[in-house]
Length: 325
Image 1 (cartoon, rainbow, N blue to C red):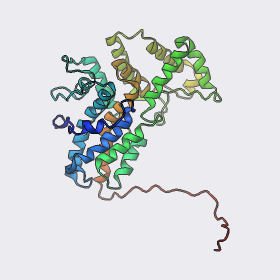
Image 2: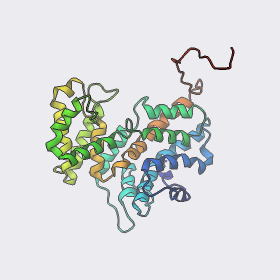
Image 3: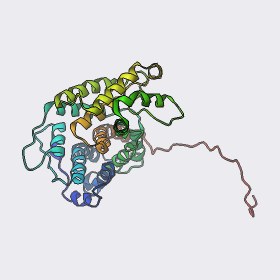
Image 4: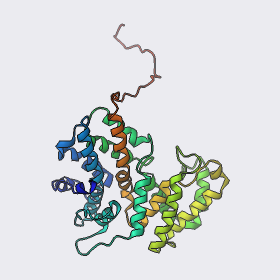
């Protein structure tokens, strides 16, 4: 059923053209996802189970198309329409990297790697973006607006932007001297006064080892071998960073193990996905989880609008000149 909804309304191309070519893909994606509510009026009642079902299918089916559209627009290349006889991951790869000039052949190793990224990022309990989707949807707004709110939240470097921040960190180390400077960089990380952070290591929930990271590590090695990138300077740098973090007592004692963001960023760069689109790919994958969480909440007959409370810690009373109590 999902494959029957992969195309987007042609008018969305005109919406897309309103963005600057150098706009961040996440800025474009946030607008496009929210804009879907202007095109699909028959599925905007979040309290109607049928509307939620068709909105869910449309969002899951069209998100790869929207992410690929934002990439093609930035590159100035022709848009590639979806091809529904391909897999979910294979179709996305073709829309991203195919051109009308020649047939695009999907590499099964890359296809499998991307499929794993989609699965491993699909849902992860009450993280910031999922909580945002639930809170937004609790007001009764339409599903497209709620998911757009999740996309916007995911954009932050402490959340979905973590793999982008990780690759930026690797590129900075490479610019400073590469593998030879890894030891010096790690010493700065240990110095709390240096302000240097180690991205792609540790996790707020997984205090021992991110179980997703183990599979992504295997996927990373498969992709690098398939593409002949085992000796790429940036990837050798990443491996050295990983080795030190797993052996140095400072990082081991603090359980700062490589997380899924560390490996998924490397895999995506190898595939050819630009760094500033990493979070867009994350949003694509997480849409499934967001929708599941939204439907679970709205389907609960006892649900009510979210209303976080605050504890005021300011002055109990203040004297205002000219005012008498």
